[in-house]
Length: 233
Image (cartoon, rainbow, N blue to C red; front, side, top):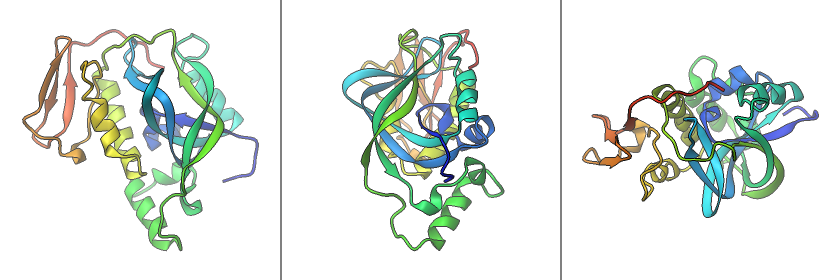
């Protein structure tokens, strides 16, 4: 990574999708995966991912290094000036990727996609481990919304982007169990898709709030509900 003034950014929503991240923040670098302690993942009242303080819960995400210009782009995309999200700085448990994998996000979305890029780097690396041991890293940027912290319903379009992000996140080492468990909350308030690779039992049908979590023929869970109005950020 370049040794320039930059900010570490913790992504937990659709910016897990490297293609979207590369498009929104063209100067960004992938750093590794991380865990935000004592926070809970949710779909908020605006229909987007959010994290809220909650003792005993952890949120898994990806960490990127962003430039000053990239951070300004993130502010616009996250709706900071409109109050959709606010900027917060937290400590996370960061598992840095091996140096050969700390690459510009645009590298991961070139021909062949993330899988090809990761396999190529790992096969040519001298290290047998894809990442380093977890260490506490402070002052990591997290976008969150305390203003819109009521539980809500994800729109189909956002679910599609989240699915792409989940696929990339799991490929880069985030445990698939985190995403599976996120959709199986006891109160059934979380409504988000699960990627096909998780092989969730096809018999699972969960009802909640007048909606359903349904399995497809491939074993994926997808939320289906009446659309709610929301603003793109």
